[in-house]
Length: 331
Image (tube, rainbow, N blue to C red; front, side, top):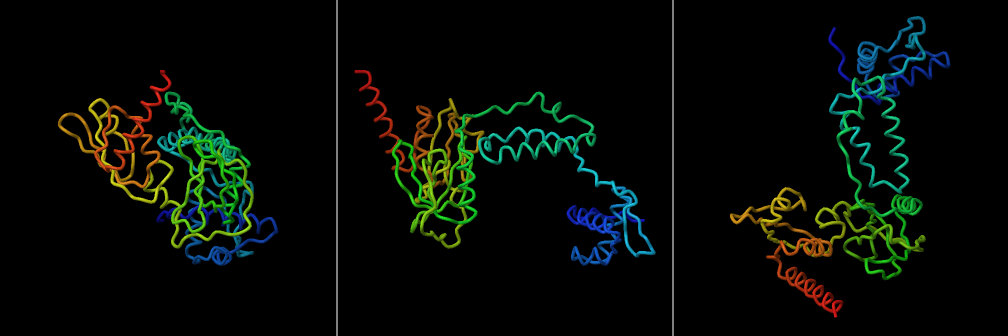
């Protein structure tokens, strides 16, 4: 007999549910009932039943007098999914990577989910997930604690497409009122950010969830721009904040940091050019600006801005301002 091909798991589970439900009421469902409920052919149902009996060991019996199927052992359960060594290793690492969700309502849900999966794997694998990762650590990065209720409130507003009036504190500590429509949540460098649409604005603005001081539902709605997709607002950004103008950026890093720069992906559009003197050029096209400036400053004195001229001028201004501030403090 030709072995049955592996069917879709949701259909297999549904077949078992129909059998159990019917058996509890004294009814034995037929293949025709399965086919109608699952909207597949009679032949597909027969293959699914063969798979359940031959591959999963399900005690499914056909009762000719009732012209239907039942479980001879009503307590039988479909075995949990079994994982190979690489899959167990991947799962054990994933369970440690929930830091971006700490402080949000998803934290406990994810821990509960990983716990259930872990318990379902007991006695189903021949090696310990803990043993696989006992020599591996994922170090905690700095992060901003997020108010759980606010995170959930913003997520619900995004789902409902409602506009809000919020009091927001910017990076410099100044507070202002904003009327926006939140459209997307994004985790970045230990904080959560919300992308939001302003009325008549061409692109969404980005706000740190931790700096929203107060929010309430706005009295009017804000429509989404035509063909708007939240992911498009982030794809060209350098970091979390994107500007309106697209710029081609050309940076040159000294040999002292060339290996570190060349081995990392800093932006999806980047090109790395290695030079004979050991330095490297990083070329990318981005809509980012504020974070890009801070990032370039963090690499001084091992980076030079070759283009655009406006970026080169901005970096020079920042360096001069830093030197003047240091001189004033030294007096």
